[in-house]
Length: 169
Ligand SMILES: [Zn+2]
Image (cartoon, rainbow, N blue to C red):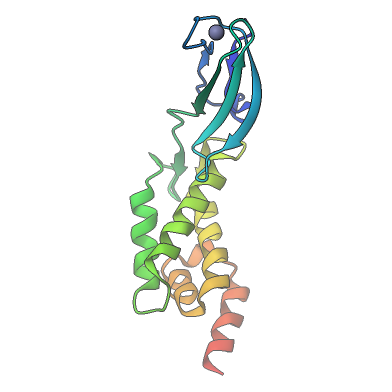
């Protein structure tokens, strides 16, 4: 009858659900986990279980829900994290470059996952900017430069200048 804690990494800050996994055949709450697998997008953990009472097998999907990410802006104001805003910023930076749309979505996914896996539910916009800049730098120099020039305080100035130098050489 042990309550089930979701994703222990979040316990410190997050709202987590505590509930019992009930066997759908006999309603027993005692089961053994046979196999655990994360969904590809890491939104859910799939567990194959065997009921210790009736021995039948069933699958549960456990997901972390309602975790709000708060972005602290430069002026100290807070707002909830918006995938759409992040995506819009990336689209602007990658306009007229060879970066495909799916790559942009991938970056948005990666950043959201990294933020949700972090220690705090509050994150400075500066940090998000730096994460984006790092990923763009590896992907497309033009997109990186464009992003860096819009969000200038997100990137290391010297680093930015040397990248520009490389481009115009
Ligand atoms: Zn059962």
